[in-house]
Image (cartoon, rainbow, N blue to C red):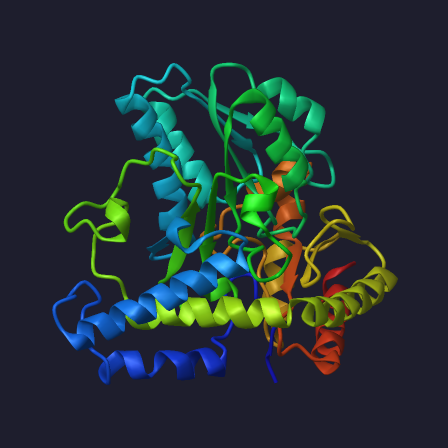
Length: 378
């Protein structure tokens, strides 16, 4: 038995989502931009229904939703789109601000923009992975154009205080982009109520299909398109909309919101059970603040063991990771920002629980770590 405990890398597609997508692969093949016949109008109606589902799940309006291939594309569209639009209109503000613990899908576009004339400030976090609001406000100087902050960290699961951050951004006239890839469908998010300007998400993090996501954009916000050649998505993202995938995204988010509270309560209890058992082994510390954090996340460092050997042993019975699925084996910059050494980061495990996680799998994970520690520690 191999227990899948890597749900923050990707979740299994919900069977109900697969069923909702099924007719749109072959029974309804029309292009949603072909409005001159009934099949095209049928496909367009399915896209608009999905747009409404995404907006409702995230506290926005259907017209705010731009469908993309995932959160990485959505992040690029948000960051580069805002920067290029500011450049085109001669905006004096150019500086971009973010946190050292952001996903590479945010950090890499920001560094790209830095090389093209947009100064970048990366703020540190405390030992729990949270940004100090006083330091953040001090960084929001009159030259700052945009702040990008992840709602829920993909490695350590901590939740940044988005509502308080949004208030600071409004006070200083700064646009706020939130990468919600790990948060959408898992915690309450009301974009309009929070005062967020741009919000990114991915389908496969919330029991939907891979290859689809969305960027929600506040009305009236200038945004330069990054893909040209057709004018789809109100001119913000050219290319034929993948009808089956956006149908799946809408269905997945609607279902995730429906069981969010019950799922969080169940997984939070299992996560706490896992942490108690691991803590009892000794020499194991939790990465990131105990709260606020995602109910289905636990990231720990195991002292006194070789990281590569630890993962080689535990992966015989549990599917877990040492960090982001996009890190390609590099040491975690998130754990480094928390003060972990390279060796400590390598000897860290991220447990990502999900809808299908059982108490038996939690016991299996505990046993796997306990046995590995017994074998590796002197």
